[in-house]
Length: 422
Image (tube, rainbow, N blue to C red; front, top):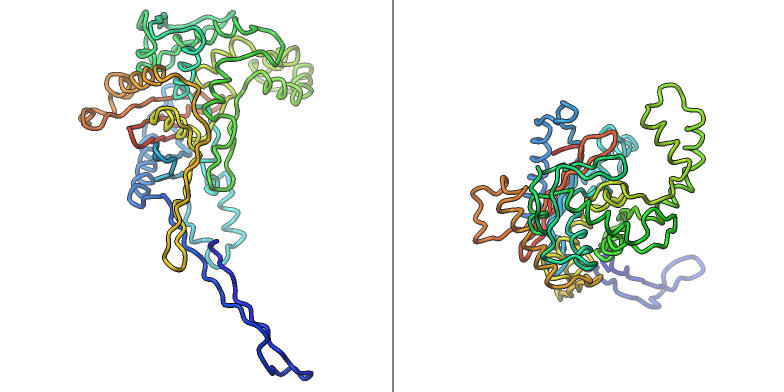
């Protein structure tokens, strides 16, 4: 469509090769022009704010490692919740696309792929796959309210929740006593959602090795489009991963020999954690345990998503339950100046009651007003521009935390992620 069609001229030649006449001629057709949905001013702001957030994170000290945050990469997405069009999208580290003009050298190409330079060719917005942390909690809320819980349900926001011999602690909040869903979202109470996940895990099969056991949390996550590409009109999009019973069995089958060998004969220097993990994994690592379920409920564990997937999820929360296929292409303008709009496409409708969406919306609005994001909106005119938000901090083994911030208004969803930052 953009390339156009070259003209063709067929001529008659004599035996010597001289042109003696014209047989036929087809005029070339100029290519069309593509208009994207990207707003240049918003895009510039997104790139500037993402870089600024990363530079700020690098100046802060990680309370766990006592070192400065690495803040090695990040991404941001701004999406029109009414159409699914991408208004701005950035990835860090970035690079000058001018390197492609006139051909790129092998040295320059190697630099774009090099981990030492942050792999700038990787678009974190649609290819970065990370645990979502507490930004996942609206999904757990929707699943709970569709499976026996009500808007009047109150659970104890305790300091920790014990599963077996392990305590799962609150990460982002202190204990608050008996609270409901709205407050649990606003203050991001982990133990509130742990209790829901554990109860549903017991109800739907518990420690059973049956990979076909129904899982309400997994079903709801998939209905929000997670675990598969969003369908954006750009190449190379990653699918993310839903770490359910089937995935765990597949992972076990693929890794069993490795971990069993490691359990039987661990090399010198192997950590006690890895030794213990290998022994347990070798025996029955295919089982989806209670710990997997409670981790899943707060966006931890092996489940991953992309910033773009999270933006589509929060867009659906904003617009009443419509899950869009994101689009960057907006119009095609022909050589005659006639514009043809590229239609938006609905991927699915959320199987979530309007009352549930309203409850989630109120909880996320309270997150901005008095909850975990309130410090960021001091002085902001929330009465004029009501912003709903959700913070998320995902723990990553061997690395610093992944920081998430997801927001939406009645028209736009904005998601930002920083790897190894806060």
